[in-house]
Image (cartoon, rainbow, N blue to C red; front, side, top):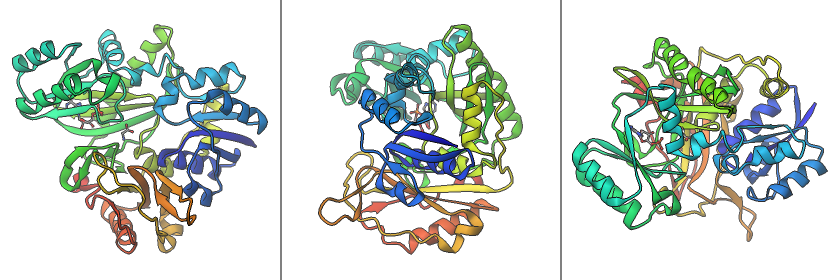
Length: 427
Ligand code: AMP
Ligand code: GLY
């Protein structure tokens, strides 16, 4: 039996820790910093900062942790896997260098170019004037991305030229994204259905998960600003197996082999954000980690032992991953009012009563931005995405009914959620 330290604090880390504890292999999960909502599932939050690698390593030593799972992108990009490995702890996730596939859009684009991986045509600019001239030459629709990490908010899909110009002004003149804004990637607009394909990866070997679809816009009907993701479901019936197979062959296989060939092998979870265009699947972005909220609909489909699978990968053995490919999983995020642009935290979290469908449908609440308030000990919203309710049912409609019944009968004052998660599967 193993003791595992999960790094991160969101719904994704809650789902990872919960799945680890469901298996036989892992007996104890600590989550740093975690959140108090996780405690109900037997996960132990550890009040240590993500940026203090040496304190985390000391904790791992102290608690005799067997291995570490690094959830979010920032610690990966800052070399947390390298640091744990140097201290003698197996850590599941890419090295600092391999995590550049998410950390730098330019790095990812150049890698894709070298290995002929289908993606939107692009150009990179360091100045406002050059970027503006390019936008005027190309016209709209066009996509503007701040290079580096901007928490999913550095992207503007401009359907007209004025929007594109405003986005450039935000980045270069107003410096809205800080240092992430010193450089911009301008991309061809890709038209088609979007989906997320995640794989367990060890160098050239990979084990794909079922696909899922996120809902990036804040409000119903895909309106409002881009967010970290407001809900997800899996499978995505409008994406055929042929498209998935093509994506594995033309994207996942060459990118993993390419990174090995360049002496920068990737181990961990590789997330491909894809668009099924008329010319086949193309890459919008790679992430070096599990997606959030995708993880919360994918891991509940896993019918094998997550901890055993990851340990096999870490030990160089053949892992086993099996999935429930029959039923639909669906999850709806509950966010603080005003998220993402003007988030008002502090809403009181009332209990979501999942008991009616827990046994048959595995209905579960995964907590993200929640904290115990100091004055009354009450669980309160502490950031944009607060929690997520997930279930498993025969159809998208059945799953929606279960979740929206629970959400509708709970007091969510001070928070909001989308009412249409899964709608594209029903069109
Ligand atoms: P990203 O942060 O790169 O995932 O972009 C956020 C969202 O913008 C994506 O989920 C897509 O919906 C959209 N997007 C990004 N790049 C493109 C593109 N080249 N063409 C069309 N839509 C895009
Ligand atoms: N849901 C998108 C992401 O995790 O980046």
